[in-house]
Length: 147
Image (tube, rainbow, N blue to C red; front, side, top):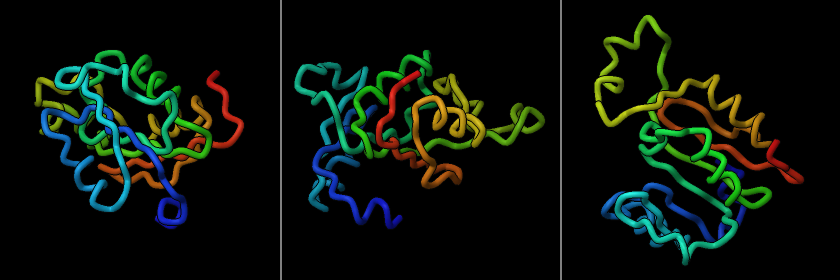
């Protein structure tokens, strides 16, 4: 991803880091500091910055009980030109859903397709940099306002 390599990311946020923030530790080794937030394990948001250059969600968005609210909160914390990146398995349509292993995990309550990420990009003023299951990377456009 040339866009990511060319841009200096000074501060990121691992949204849904879990009990051990492995991604934050890996990126710190590459010089990128990630704050951590998790609604179960790291609930205190008082030390978090107002805006970030990068927010990651690794195997998290499928656990959002109120995806619209969660995505709005994430995008409010992204600065202009920032990246929203993560991992989730994309569903392949209703005819495959009943047999899909990902849907059988009872902690997964929301499911996404490429169409969902195109909608999110339009809704929150982003461009899609990469979209191939399980990876998504969106970039917040300059002069974006949440509609």
